[in-house]
Image (cartoon, rainbow over all chains, first blue to last red; front, top):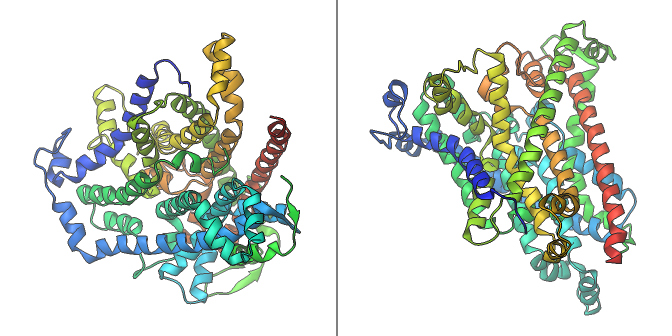
Length: 268
Length: 300
């Protein structure tokens, strides 16, 4: 791959631009509130762990992380398991209304969450799922399932069709072929799709906040409420923010080799 | 590779269909229902026909004025961030290191902003831009630039745009990088033998190969910026005044703030329709681009 002159400088500047605001957040999370408000310091002069300690000992804080992870994992499992067979169908067969169906799915990925906030609230209240992780997990399916189908379809299409035919000739039943042969072949694709489901479910706030009140409240919503209630506890806010970055950073590290292909939705 | 016609494939698609229909069609029906009615609370509803839609598209009414103003702001915002993020993303993708551990390091750092919850992105920039405690605001003010995103419209806009560039340029860059990676080394060798200039290599080899991923990038960035809510809401709350109130912010204000269900539903439908149309145009362009490419691939 050929790159452009001055690439090290450009890349360096861009990475600094990306990292500087994050550094500032980390920096603030280790400062005491009096240091934050009184002086402008480039690094914490009296470093403290008090904000992190508060989050890890106060249940109303750390339960938020558990709630968030709960619906994110649920959503990822649901999305991938329903999307896999559909991706295979879209990749291998033509059937009545396939193109329209694909577009309809895609259009749901593009629908603004704000449109659905209120009807979701009514729907999940009516069926008794309001304020449970299931409500958020199902609501997030609206954009994650189409995305998962889209990514997986790209990966399934990369598997030569002869493999299916050989397997069927060898007497594999469809479910057995699917689990024993196809799934291992597109394992990296499943990883990428799961990464994307995780990512979009983890970063979404509007629906997650609307569909929960007390017992399933995501960390992102707890952050907004606590800040407005206690005036401005900047240090605590920063610490909570840093902790929301960590799961994402861990997940990226695991899929770093597939990231580029995944971002192209398996279509390069 | 021709696909076989098989209607039984519907059974494989059925789970997806049910899940998405449950979370898309049912709520949408509620929205259509509300959009034709007016409510005075207490769950009492009155038939209002297409009244809300008329009001929505008429700039002289309160609702219409607010909707069209926020729509204009949102379109302007989307165009600005596309104009910045797409070229910048291409440049960053071309600047990726060739191999070694730095590639993985760059990829991870690039992807980092994408995995930060959107309200935390807002919080990061809210803190970073504040003149009293934020590095950016402090440095700008120390340099003699009067910068305050809370009170100045232009500063608020610049902050929101820079924040979006910070947040999403990586997506464009990663997509382009994926496109560039798929170019066989032989193409470059051929170009070298022909004595092609850097610019010629970019125009004749790299850009055409990035066509498809760029389309995906533009599609995703347009859609996501068109429904942006959380980040500007956290940073500016839609202010100062209404200067950064985008369509989603206006919609949530009407729906969950004022509980004006009829108006909010009508706005939702028009908003959704706009997105649907744009999405359809992109989809058609994309699938056509794919269809044109296939015969070439077969020949090669």
